[in-house]
Every structure is written in structure tokens, then in C-alpha cells.
Image (cartoon, rainbow over all chains, first blue to last red; front, top):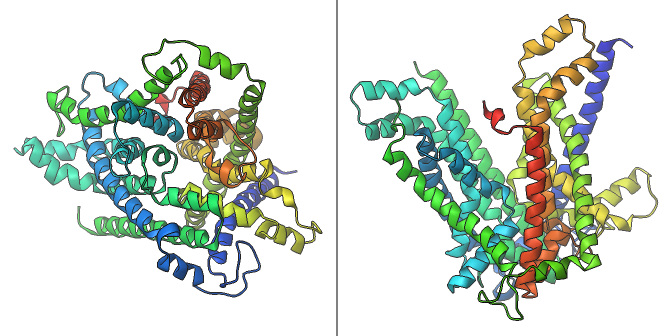
Length: 275
Length: 287
């Protein structure tokens, strides 16, 4: 067989594998999306028994026991706080790494450790710490601290990559022209790293919003959305869970596409402007 | 010259908050777990003598040893599957897809689910794998099976399918990165020197992507080893791996046993990462 034929054959083979995997990856999610719109008598599997928004309405009108609105609000606020904190800490840390302070190699590994350590260990360890200190765990105190420690390594790595990428001559020019370091950072560096900052903020938000293991050990009595979902799953799997899953997934997709569009518009604007 | 002076106190002070945060929220808790796992005595208290009794008690139970072995087998299996699958997908997306538009579209279809909740994705497998689920319906529709297969859900098979779906991207991503950083001239040079494609792949592409493979394998290893969400949602509490055991002991307020399992989990992870670092130098990847 000629090698070109063989190369095309591998192409087809690998293509089939890839498409097959993509279908396999999306099929469960589409099953969930579809079933979330099933009729009032619909269950957690097919047949759907009609098409309705019944389960979404149930979600909205639910009270007390299976009310997902308070956990959702808590998750949202926690994710916002985590996102903001992650941005500030990772920009500072990455900027500091450029200063090559003493022990920066060790520092790099310290921050990376948060990426490696599994949530179940960090959560459990932090629960021991708070118990020894006699602190009561809560979603907006202990869980917040642990969530930031999860998002921080991602933000730090993002910001390091961003700081390494732009042309240092731009900063040098500003400094040579007499700008103070603070002014140069504010007027030159900050606009350059802004896309990375937005990426970091996204990381901070979505990592916190979806976090389960760390929250389980540290959030105390008022849980976040993933905890509420898991608790409901323990009681009974209902189409309401599919509705929640569909709603949160849709929300993530909207946020991602908004950011993608933003980046694209910005890139186009930068390309269009005279340099 | 940049906006921060080399080795200045400012750099140190800027680094401090993040460093302290990680030390307090990650390093200290992990050290505390090790300490608690050594507490002796009958009551749970820091004043008790330090012993290895807890470990002895745990490791003398045959069932727990089986569970550790079982977890490792499962992890190795998922690593193998996601490794091969991830490499195929990475190779196809970066090398074989010619049109940039298609490449971006396929790549997005591959990556986007990763940005959504793992818990939700795991739950979505329940209606997918169930008796009336989409997979059974599809298999029956094309006539491969006559009756729905019950063993998909609440079984090891189901857990493995969910884990492969969740973690293949982790194995694939680093390979994509390494494949993209191979200069096209290398391949052209080898082709000009009459190397057949298989030799080009075997002698040039594969060695150059090896660091990516290893990093991907480490990520999958760490995630599967500590995974308990997939096992509880798709496995329906019928099965348990190390992560589930930690949760089980914790819910039973057996803090010291929880700590023991946690430390064992940590040791397994450290061993795996150390082994991987022997194969490739992670620090070389950035430069």
C-alpha cells in the first residue's frame, strides 16, 4: 500500500475515534437536557410523557425542603467573591514572580501544590484545622478560604503565561520616558494583561461554582448548589435535577461564549487600529 | 527593566498574601491530617501519645487492602484507556484536520464540557446508561441487542464509562500542547530523508510528545485515584474506592481512620508523581 493511502486511512480511523468520543461525551448531557423538558408525568428516563416546562416551574415555586434557590444564591455569591480574590492574589503573585524574589522556585511549587492536592484531602484537612481552632464552618468563611486556594493555582499559571508573553520593551519605554513603576503598570501593563485577568476571573468563578469535595467538608449547615444537588440525588433522582443541571450548564455556556465573543471583538479592534 | 525591580522588597510583599493563603489552606491542613492519623489512645484528642496503631489496624484488614488494590487497578485501566483515546484525538485534531474552521469547531466540542460542572456531567450519565436510557435505546434501535442491558448503570462498567468521558481531556490536552510545539521542519526533514511515516511518528513525534503524555497521565492518575463523585452518582453506592472510604469514615465520625486513609492516598499520589518526574522533567516544558 502506498504511504499516502495509508496516511489517509489513519486519518479516517482517528477521525472516527474522535467523532465517536465526542458523541459519547455529549450524548449524556443531551439526554439530560431533553428529559428536563419532559411532561408532568414524565420520570427520570424515557418515555418523556409530553413536553413541558413543568420541572422548571417546580424548581421556581419550590419551598423549604427541596428549594434550590438559596443554595444557588450562596453558590453565586461565593463564586463572585472567589473570583475577585483570585484575580487580586494571582496578579500580585505573578507580578512578584517577575521580580525573582528569594525563594521564588519554592514559591512556584507551593502554589502548584493546590493544583495537585485532591479536594477530598484539602477539605478534610481544613475541617480538622477549623475543629482544632474551634471555628464553626460556614459557606462564606471557611468554604471561601478553601475555594480560593483551589482557584488560585489556575489563575497564577494563567497570569504567569500572560506576563511572559507580552513585549517587555513596552514597559521599558514607559519607564524610560519617566513614568513611575506604578503609573507604568497602571497605564501600560494592566491593559496588556487584561484578557488574562478576565480569564482568571472566569476560572475563579467556575471552579468555585462547581466545587463539591472541598465544600462538603467546610461549608457547615448552609450548603452550596452542588451540595444541594447531591443531597437531592441521595433522597431521590427527579427531573428537577435535570432542570437544574440544564440551567447551570446553559449559564456556563452563555458566560463562555460571551467571553469568547469579547476576546474576538477585542482582537479584531486591535488588529484594525494603526500600530 | 520592568514594572517590578529584581529582588526588591516589593516583589516579596506582593508574593506574600498568595503564599500565606496556600500555606494556611493547603499545606497546614495536609500536615494536620498526617498528625491526626498518628493520634493514639481511646478518645480522639491531641494529647494522646503518637503511635502507628491506626495504620496497623487499618492495614491488617484484608478488605481494605483489596480496596486499595481495586482502586489502583481501576486507576491504571482508566489511565490506559484515556491515554490511547486522548492521544488519538489530540493527533487527529492537531495533525489530521486540515481546515482551521473544522479544527476550532471540533476542539470546542471537545473542550466545552470541561467548563461545566463535573457533578452534573456525572449525574447526566444516569439517564444515559439506565435500562430505558439513551444508550440502550440506541443499541436496540440498530439491532445490536434485543433486551436492554442492565449492567450499564450502577456498575463498574458504568463508572468506567463516565470516568473515561470526564477525564480524556486531561490526558489529551498536554499532548495537544506538545504536538503544536513541534516545528514542521522536523517532520519535513525526516520525510526528505525518506523515512516512512511510521518511522517519523515512532522516532520523532512520539518522543517529542512524551512529556505531554506523562503529564496527562499524571492528571488522570490524580483525578481518578481521588474520584468519589462518579462512584457515588453512577455507581449508586454499590461500589467503593479509596475516596469513598474516606467519606464513609468521615461521616461515621472516625476521624483517625479517615486520616489514615487520606495519608495512604497521599502516599500513593506522591509515589505516582515522583515516578512520573523521573521519566520527564516538567520544568523543561515551559521553555
